[in-house]
Amino acid sequence: MTRHFLSLLDLSRDELYGIVRRATELKRMQHRGDIHTSLKGKNLGMVFEKSSTRTRVSFEVGMSQLGGHALFLSPRDTQLGRGEPIEDSARVLSRMLDIIMIRTFEQGKLECFAAHSRVPVINALTDKLHPCQLLADMQTYFEHRGDINGKAVAWIGDGNNMCHSYINAARQFGFHLNIACPEGYDPDQAILTAAGDRVSVIRDPLSAAGGADLIVTDVWASMGQEEEQVLRKRAFARYQVNDELMAQAADDALFFHCLPAHRDEEVTTSVIDTEGSVVWDEAENRLHSQKALMEFLLLGR
Image 1 (cartoon, rainbow, N blue to C red):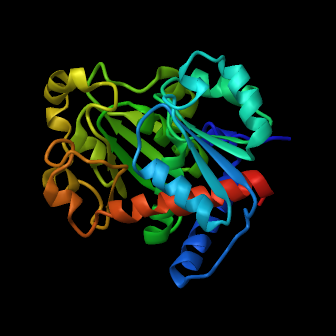
Image 2: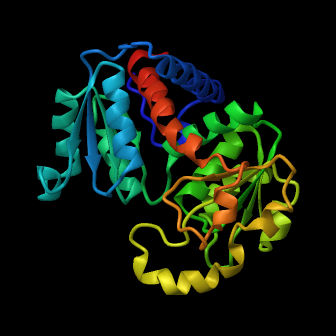
Image 3: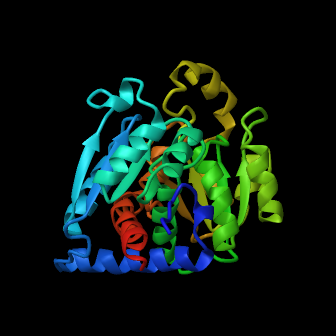
């Protein structure tokens, strides 16, 4: 049976832990210079409707390092941007490729593509979810602090796709998540409700950060929200991750940001450049965790 990765909830907890462990192993191998071509002869299709730096580089380089080939597909250069039904594109591409990643706007478009694909489909970001980033984030936490099960995590900012994926991660990895967001910017209620007592919404960011083992944030205006920049800057003014907020967290708390960061907006330079900030490890781990994910989906291990 074809397995897809459209959400963290598509895999079991044991499978997710296995991918994180494998990602760390692949990272060590890469740093040692070991050649590992487990996906030799495999072809990855990369469908981009949203622009990207980290996602494109990590998937393309990752597939190359595993001995396979990655093919970049943009709407400008294919029938995807000329009105071909998603179902038809999925049927055709999945007869030529071994695995497909899609970075798009609507989650429904991704789900429709996967429903008509013969090969594994990976959610490389939608407006609703960003599960690949969470694999990298969990790998990063495990490498620095060990198992995140039972820990306290604080999400500071918008109830966006990253926030939704952190809610799902709280369910799958067993941590408690405090979400600090202004009214009107809450995460999706259905995603919140499904998480039960794993998640709390707290309006005061300093209270949400109290005793947290991990502080996470994201930009205040994501791609496609640029026209809301001024309004959002005003709404999120007191939700900045700064020295005062980090002082509320545990003494050894880590700071995460999926990048790119708007320095001195959602996070101060004093925080992102401090010792507890591991955003560069987090960014690198996109490469290793996605390699482990592709191995799992294609090889079943």
